[in-house]
Image (cartoon, rainbow, N blue to C red; front, top):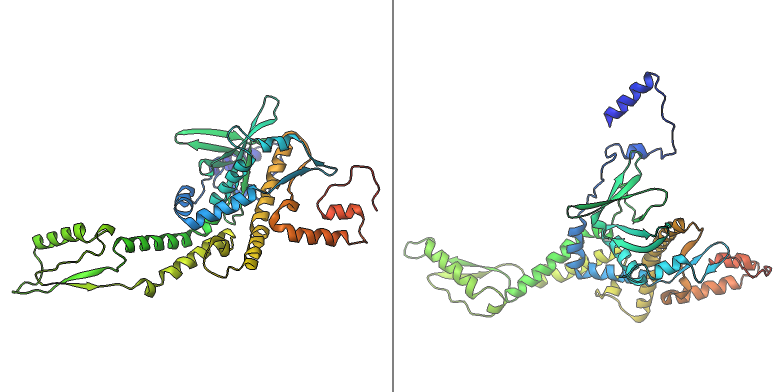
Length: 399
């Protein structure tokens, strides 16, 4: 790149006319200084985090499933500045996105990829007329952003083994890239799984420790001490090998739990280590589980982590879960997907959440409607705007 810059400066100094300038971000060239035209690989290993934090950890698994299922079940409405649509090509497409998925399955996969990797990708399969006919969720660990010289993506590359496919980014991009905020990456998002990686390691290690303890009859490890006699200070090689073989075959594993140990020839058993109560592994495991839930924004009470679990508090925890975690995430995704599809259909429409149909928010919505309805100093138009409703289309005058 430095060579190109030097050549460009030389040509301009020799009187060669410079190419006309186009609109671009002022910081784009600085961002792409080190990676112009090359794939910007994500610094985190999504496959490993998914394997250990989702497939191999019950807390991470449940957090992702709870958020993805709750967000995918939220009802969506499509509207413009004049009306709310009951039927529309965008609604029909999202109701039946492809032959293998319905609305709930598509959005659950979309939210799952976003929570596991910090990125989610939608592909639009268009007809000959250029209108999207199908929408598919692509695996984020297989997708790479290809930035251009101005720092903005010029393409996306999807790789499966040795096979690769390049999606070009133009005026109408076939790819919708939704990402979480990452303060140190210009092209990829930061997932809650990455933030909870340390707590996941602690939780998994505590589970493995408990499993190993159970496999050894729930007793701590110990040492076999040889008390030499007849001038011998240590075991011979044959004696040592026979002792190790007998320990492995007769006294290790769950099937040998409780089997008495027969020691001979000056051998003595000395237990070592702390008891589970002394090491407080259960409290450590619960603390790690709380940190994992904190990273995902799920109240620990909803996951069954020990604590205050009265019915009233559970309702408050469920409402906080929707208000602080599910709704912000779902609102961002709905706005991004709606804007992307609106460009393909060339219509100024918005995809929004229908909060009035969320059971967990029913008390708040009832109080909100009553408060606005009782405001006599507001016109009907202002009340509808505050409730997120489009203007009336029946021609009646506002009060």
